[in-house]
Amino acid sequence: MGVSVDGESAMNEIIALCISGVGTVVWYLLKQKDNQQQSELKDANDKIDTLFIKHDADVQALQELRVQIAAKHYERPELDKKFDKLENTVTEGFTHIGERLDKMSEAFNARRQ
Image (cartoon, rainbow, N blue to C red; front, side, top):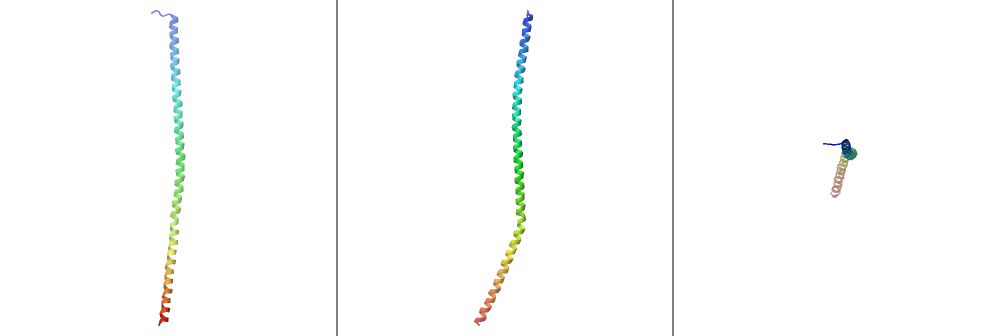
């Protein structure tokens, strides 16, 4: 094998150039992959932020619903009092009307006799 010194150095330069080219291609592919992962990470963070915003809105809506339920719960005793008062008024009114009808009947019967 009679390889001359110039041929050997040329071969070394070609090998070095190939290694440099492969290194450049690997670097480029890794950079692309890194950019893709950063983009995916940003998208995931945006989705997480959106979920937290939705969660906060749901918490607020739930709190408002609790307030409405509590308000309706506390209305019931008040309504019960009003219905009891109405019931007493109607009962007393019919009793009073009944008493007057009895008096009218007695007066009518007294005149008739």
